[in-house]
Length: 463
Image (tube, rainbow, N blue to C red; front, side, top):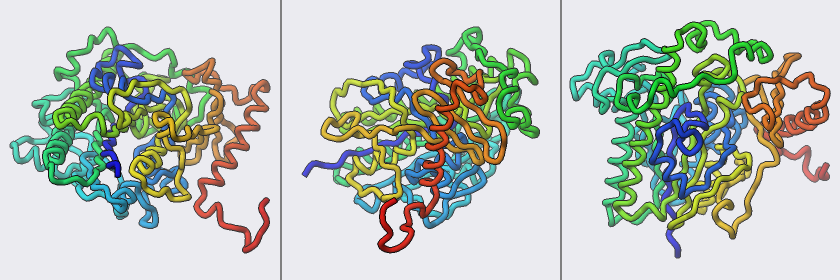
């Protein structure tokens, strides 16, 4: 019987699609670029929600956030849900995690045999979010508030040794777990390992490090989209109130350029740590037959529309994310795929790879058919996305965004306007497409409602 492959699931937090060297040559990610050469790379990968908790809940359950009852940042998974890691564990996989999960206040069985969870993003985050990372700092006599000075937009300068940075710590612990697992030659049980970095989520704190020094400040650029473009979008874009640190207009040009450089530098640090994990795989001749999945929970404005960070919206800056899979095939020649895909289908993919039965309420658009020619390629007819009271559809490069109980909305032709600067909501030329998108929207919202498939009555005929 053929051994089921091991699976590594690598996640970052708040990483834009255009932050890898193969997409944007200004970003230094040699290890990710090399991994992508052996992978199925989705050029149009998206998340289901632009916020950490609901997006991750969707990934972990293989459902849309509203479907698994986590529509917003302040909601969390109920115990009635089940993670795909738990399903893999029940089907004979050893499951482990190092890094961020963000189950928030949920008491759900996460599904891991081994857990080293660190949900914080910086040394002075609440103690309960830092766990073993805070212990590590204390063991080395490091005062958390001595490591970082805020002097940029939602970020600042790193003051300590880089080995004390949270992403460096998570990378080292991931490498350590991998070394221990692969050196145990007696254990033949297949495994699933999540390595989840807190970065490059703000605070953007790599300024002052060797990683920032790898970038010339003059190479950082402003977006072609501007703050003025927000006039044709929803009011939430201009009314962030207590979150006013997200507006570039309140800072100097130099502060933004250094903020952007810090963001890129964090990705380069993470890339270096991923490279170290991949070297361990190769050391034990495990690279070729291990599945590696990479994605992020959502993106970051990083200058688009004069903003940084994120907010409640469905703009491409936040919804389009890195997404690729290295299959368990020696010398696999990488391919770039233009199909629209969602990262909630990581669950279906892992379950098909592990020969685990898929629950009927989970999304079943596995990626496996893109490299296994004996399997069907399951393509989504359209993309459905959520952001609390905002819902959206993408079909054939056209995006329609519905605001619940509001008379306004957004509509963009991404084929002509990828930066979403021209709102077509009231354009009569697009009315027929908008109508079709609303049909898709109604169907999607219905299907994302728990219990939607309950029969009307016993023996009721098909409608």
